[in-house]
Image: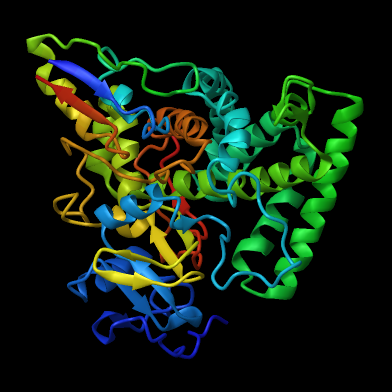
Length: 63
Length: 408
């Protein structure tokens, strides 16, 4: 599973990183810098929680 | 003092079944229970977007999905005015960056974002915890206090003034001016406060020009900060400083007071956080989802069709984070604070390009206060006879938080 981030939608809420700090990495300004990152199977549920917590709907998870 | 305005005429492009009568600023039920009243309005119609005849007449967006959509569609939903009705021409300076739309907005916003990132704000963690401890030390032995006067006003305001570069020793004067601006609902008083705040900001900018410090305004004055390849003008700096003043001195106080009020009144949940402080960050998010602060305003920048309705240029909208965060389609059992909520996609800090730039600082301060105060407020409860009251919108916040606790 791969994290996809629409950077044009991310406005730096950092909710994803609050829920799953080890999966979602932020840049210095607090924007999601995890586009393309591969999620291991045991972290699937956590990744989904992080994705669903994004107020901008900027994150998708690709199989 | 705040009588609902007489019902305004309904424009021809508004369908009759979309009309409600609700003055979101002056409805008499708001000071007692603003969230209950907003929820009632949301539940009273099967629509996600309605026109209200209150407050001169405007649209209200009632459901989370539509609020988010509107706040993200900046081409249609302009931020040009933060008031309904808009101020008369010449009576108000445009706030930077709040009343700018993309792409203009981004030029200024990026100067601020780099200053307010989550990692940068973490350096205020120690300061916030120390300040919380000191402020509580002053009242610890009294066993009673208004936690708003004692903690939730001085703590965020003090940190904020230092960070921006406004003089901390004038904190009380600033807070009084901010209150005059937000809670008087009297145009003359608001105008007087606005003029005074601009005067103070202007003086501060001039003095920081001579003697810069480690603060936001000095950073904006420095040669590094450029818009379109040039330094910021005095007028632009003034607008940003004013914006900071009104955004920073009120909202964190409101959020912090609501959070403390919830934990004062819910001892079991309070104990959970004392036993497991790692739960504090998500608990704050959930308490503030249920007790959000800001009702955002947008204005149609052109005629357009959206969600089956026609809108005309100049139509105004309340796109409220309060309303969105109480929508059961997004949050099951929305009126209940559920610290175990699995997914919490709230928009406490707004959504879209105008998302609150200070959110990461607010979180650091909120966590510090809950961390320091909850364990020390032994057996805390509301002071006898207390009836909590809320300030009238546009910003929801408690007027005071009188409590008692056991002194060992």
